[in-house]
Length: 217
Ligand code: ADP
Ligand code: ADP
Ligand code: ZN
Image (cartoon, rainbow, N blue to C red; front, side, top):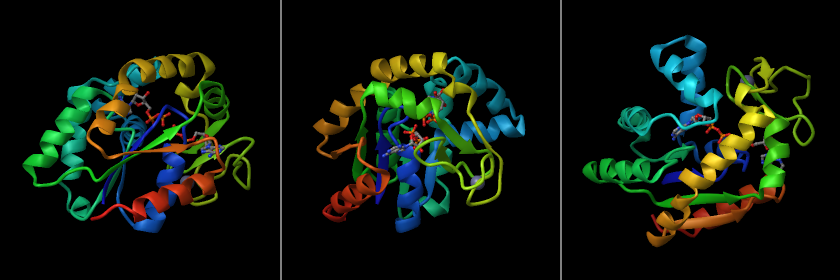
């Protein structure tokens, strides 16, 4: 299945992606993870993306669209993929539609995770991630077994620069202005499935799996 994970920063997209990938063995394409890897490697893409990310702004559409199209052409995406954090604007969604159509493919379902802003702030400021495998933790609700060390790969668990409180507020504003319109965009296409993201991680996951199980392929 070709899936999109939609929702504000901190809704739990990356967390649900980890579980979905394990169950469905589908490639996980997170544009945020792609940019963070580029920053770590010090590539020109990383240098450009960092300017936007550190101020809570979106990376320009043409940069993101090119990267995702290239990734979707790889053979591991032939039988399905899970997009996380893309599309984030209407032009990105239009470009994705056109690109998939030209390849005889389409999006089967959009998983929209809903969480109110006050909870998002707590989640984002307490979030920690693995620098090596991008696994997601939280200082209170999902701490790593050994502080600072990833349970999965032993990598360094750190706090993202853009999870600082000032940047978090900016990102929530940017979400409301530029990404939220995608909810009605995909509802109109009849492929939107919304979930209450306040529920515990496993509960959200089971609900998502139930919904996906009911989608004809
Ligand atoms: P996103 O990818 O949408 O920005 P993440 O998956 O990175 O969100 O989750 C943000 C933070 O919230 C992380 O610290 C994660 O551990 C925590 N989190 C995710 N889902 C839940 C949940 N259902 N209940 C409580 N905490 C959660
Ligand atoms: P979160 O999981 O908290 O929503 P991401 O890891 O998805 O954050 O994204 C981090 C940052 O990377 C964004 O604030 C933005 O600057 C950039 N970014 C990621 N995906 C996109 C995208 N599709 N379009 C533009 N910028 C993006
Ligand atoms: Zn790790």
